[in-house]
Image (tube, rainbow, N blue to C red; front, side):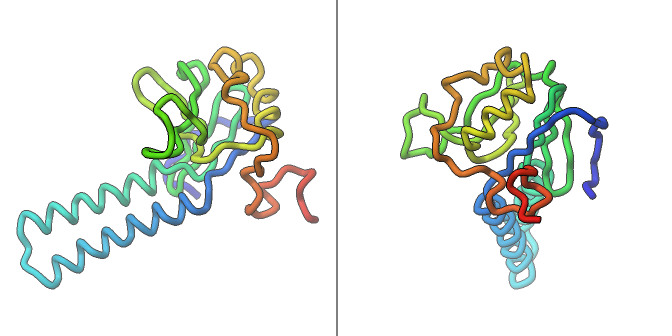
Length: 184
């Protein structure tokens, strides 16, 4: 159960897109290693401004990973629920100005080329919803669930994933898969 849960109840259709296991595990592992390094540095050396600064920085990174790194996003007709390790955040579509794609690499892609997960723009702030691109079947379902909000927020043909992409729920437990893909 997340610490902060301010999600309104919902009975209508929804679709859940998931972030990659690699991104989730590597982010948490990196944050844990950074905190461990900072604590070890304090224990083997003296406490000074540098070691305290490293510890505080590592704790900030760990906090960001736990409270802001999206594990999954549940898209609804009225908004999206960002699920993180310790928080569920509801974002109403009326607040979102645009949906865009993440850039997949710093060196491999051009600046105008997008191929990653979806990002919600709210004024000048960007909220990563998932870190990977969904399949074309999930995109069609997402477009159906969002209804008129999909076109209003720019979820059009230029954001459509190529055919043949794997769904984001592929390596998830049955409870996160759509009914048609469950093994039981």
